[in-house]
Amino acid sequence: MPRRLISFDPGQYYHLYNRGVNRENIFIEERNYWYFLFNLERYLLPITDLIAYCLMPNHYHLLVYIRETSEVFKTSEVSTAMMRLSVSYTKTINIHYDRVGPLFQGAFQAKFVDSEVYLGHLIGYIHLNPVESGLVEKPEDWIYSSFHDYKNLDPLEIIRRDTFRDLGGLS
Image (tube, rainbow, N blue to C red; front, top):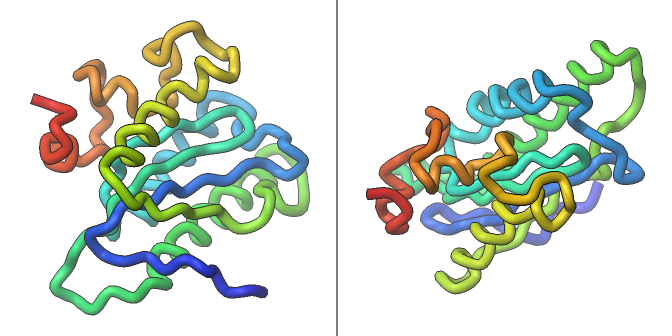
């Protein structure tokens, strides 16, 4: 298996995303979205802050900040956490829906966020994804995203509020 070309450095932002095999849905019903978020909290949030996210029927977008810790950080930690998230979620979906094989189209994709301008663009892009896809008319109508956290509507506990304050997103 080829090695990931991107390294994950503490104190940096990354856009992580993936989609279903053949662009098929990865979320079949409402509880699937919540189970994915549960696993996201379990595997990824111990080493990252979740800045923005959007779960779409056939793909997801995560904007994360790699925490700076006093412990030695290994770049493989993010990849391992994402692999555990993907494998755990796929196994559960396969069991519950009597299916076999991969759910995701390969390993997750990652892009380094290299500027504040790109960071701001990405937050908007992630939250507007359901609107651009024609699923809803307004981003606040899509409940499977962090848009509500930016508007102080029904904040999800898995979002770290101090990170939003640092970005000027919350008062």
